[in-house]
Amino acid sequence: MMKCGRLIREHTGTKRYALFGQEAIGSTWALVKMNLFLHGEENHQIEWGDTIRNPKLRTSDDMLRHFDVVVANPPFSLDKWGTEAAETDKFARFLHRRRVSSCSRSAPECLQGGPNGQRGSLTLPRPC
Image (tube, rainbow, N blue to C red; front, side):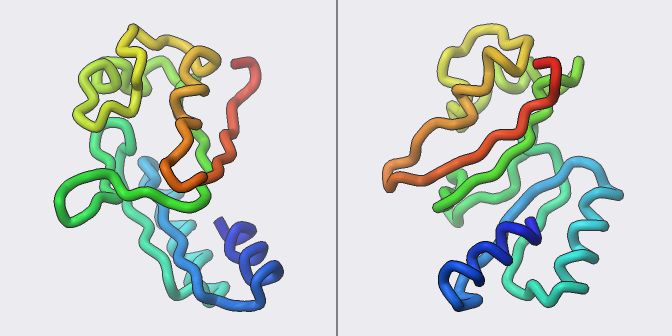
C-alpha cells in the first residue's frame, strides 16, 4: 500500500489521492494502520474484516465501492476461504456461480474490468 501511494506522488507530484483497503487478519490490519501513520499517509480508509463474507468498502446505498486501481491478494489458496459465501454473493462478484475451489479458476473473476477502465493487479500464491 505504501508503494502505491509513493508511485502516485512520483507520477503526479500531488497527494490528491486516497488509499482504501480491507484486511481480515487483525495483526496485519494494525501494522498497515501504523505504517500509514508513520509515513504520513493521512487520506486512507483501512477496514478490518473478511472481504468475501463482509466487504466493508461500500457506498451509502450499500453497493460495493469502485476504484481506479485495485491491487489484490485473494485468499483462494486457503482451504476455507469462503466458497460457500462466494456461491451466494449478493454483490455478484463471482459471476460463474460454480463451486470454485482453486485460485487459478477464480483469478479471472477478480479482474473484472470496471465501467471506467479501472486497472488491477492480482497476487497469487505459488503453486496456484
